[in-house]
Length: 502
Ligand SMILES: Nc1ncnc2c1ncn2[C@@H]1O[C@H](COP(=O)(O)OP(=O)(O)O)[C@@H](O)[C@H]1O
Ligand SMILES: [Ca+2]
Image (cartoon, rainbow, N blue to C red):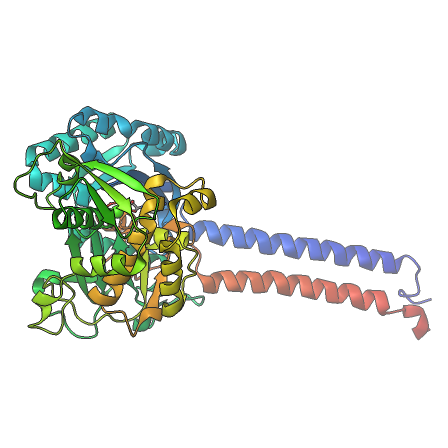
């Protein structure tokens, strides 16, 4: 009898093979973990926060990223957002400490989220936008007092407070553009085989933000920007970008709609005025003191702030559109062809655009999918504008009155800016109405934090921290190979009957 003929030899070989499989797998895993540890230093998740103090509301954005990979693209993600209760900080003129107090609830949420050990090194910024820009135009002292109050509150928390300030319109536009292109890895991409590549220039997106008090457009034009007041030169990850950006103050949605009210009131100065953008059956009474409380509208003379005007909705889509057209003035653009509106230089729009904030809210509410063709968009707006207030209220019982009455006006305003102002007629299908990219809200805050915390290097990253893809691929290959070899031995042993050889 040969050794193979021994009836105990087959189970023995099975056992040896099984042990071999287990040993090789364990060795492969241990090797993989050991090499991983030598490349990856131990790191902690890092955090950063930005308050977006807008004209209508304030939100807190808490971001997180792995501490050893801060210079990579796409690693900073949104951990949470918190909506501050109440109106924007610029509304606290008569109660500045209230502006500070209003932030406490969200600061407490952040406190409960950021681990104790990380709080002291968590930067917190507050950036105020067009509401505070307008207030500082009206009364610089009041704006300063409000900023001091919000700073005082944030400083009372154990974070690394880095300042509360009004950001410029150009910053707001540029940071929105950085946010989008960072999230979509438009600047630089880390490939599977461990290389940094510059994605095709066509992947760089333009950004359009419609706020309550200002609106921004930012993009990289085909040709050099001719007006230096609208140009920003950036060097990100070793690549240069020339960005066109402009912020139209007083052209945010709410200020624009206020200017329509003022225009209608001045055109027919009686106590009741028809409003073509409000639904029929809807009435709104406003004190003239409130109507003319903004630097975006000029007061009529004579002017009595205690008088009121009642706007009666007439639900006339066509007339609403022509009122909007009057806001977007092209006469100053007659002299030079590269023009947006109100005499502001603008090169022809280039590439794809993400339109967010009130652009998104309005289109989303009207049920307009991201790439709805232009004629369908226009007919949807027309049919929405013709609905009576009763119909709207019963159809949308949960929508806030202020939003519901304004959607027709907002939609017409958006179409006017995009088609007449920015001239997207032939390139309508290049606009995407969006709120988020990969669970991150789109706005200026992420770009602001990335910039101020140096999370975007100006030079291309040379060394890669963490496990490289090529190393990871080799490890996976080794493990799979070990398993495959062991399985092969097992199978051979199973089908091989040594008795047949005797
Ligand atoms: N659910 C919503 N539906 C419609 N509009 C909305 C909604 N939520 C927010 N908005 C609008 O989005 C805009 C946000 O502007 P905001 O950021 O406060 O001002 P700014 O950026 O000019 O300082 C406001 O016009 C607000 O009315
Ligand atoms: Ca905003």
